[in-house]
Image (cartoon, rainbow, N blue to C red; front, side):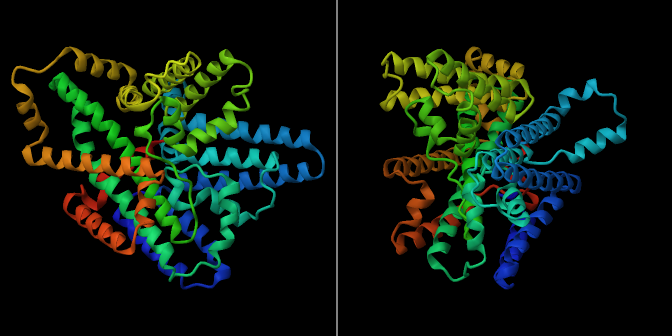
Length: 481
């Protein structure tokens, strides 16, 4: 979804109003223009980079498709390799620029330009570029789509900043529907409201409230005992899930205004019984991308258990590097690679005590939460310090209550947090049992239940939502990737 600010909400309202009052033949072009305006509003230099790469992607796609259709499969594969290599190189340069900066002799004006040109959400964007080019080469994009359609797919503003990472063969065929969508479609609006309000609840009420205490605990961990540091790790686990899942739900709801369906990115991941199931439910668009465009081409699980484990470790190392250049991201990726390797061994040895049922869920949540410490800390070294304090400091002399007061956690706030977290657990568990995401449960409910749920969620948002000036406290965690 786009960035959650007052400007974004007003911009969305304006785009929606104009969209349903222009000629059907102009709608796709209008949405592309709206997406580009939004991207340029975030940063002019970033917009120029995104527009340039998008145009090059379309040109390469035309070239590759033409070669393939004329029977020159090897040439098409070679051009695809060049285009994908350039895309990966651009991502590495932007992502690892802070690390490479000391090795580059640049003056201040060049440094300032490169900082400005670093596009927000470029990691999500470039993975879509790669998947589109590879799918064209593989002939998975059967229809040759036009310039406007391809650019709209790459730059669609509700998903631009933080995904989901859409595939061309899922997104592009839907563009034709945009020309025919009508405003007064109550079944569609029921879905829009269900997804958007649920997303806002996850993001603004739970994630942003948890973030207040997470930030304090991680930035000043020396001031707190092990109990509150453990609570900080737990709350960050909740924060990053509710932030990203909430954002994804909002993106789905906003796209549904224009009758575009985005990928379900989360399916109750913290109720997974093992780490393999977790990655089938967490950030689905990323995990499926890594599987289809990296794990399977490397050989997947077709070449024995040792090769399977090595491929898994490599994929998660890339996953960590994709998130950022910091040492903490690399450690986080390697940890999940090791978790997955251990899970493979436990499955082969039929040791299912920690892979199924209640204890499997507890174990999976704990190891995932432990790895998040490296993801959240400023570096791997800072994460190790946090973990050391968490396990060695214990409860300080002045006690848990005094530390709670220094965090700003009074009795009312603790009760509010507990009620909200319990509500989240009930919602997630119900969705897990019924095998539908929470917004779909609301959307498929009786009309009276939907109205009551909308009223309750809106009331909770008004009373318990965490808002800053111009909603600036509601930036998305995954914007930085």
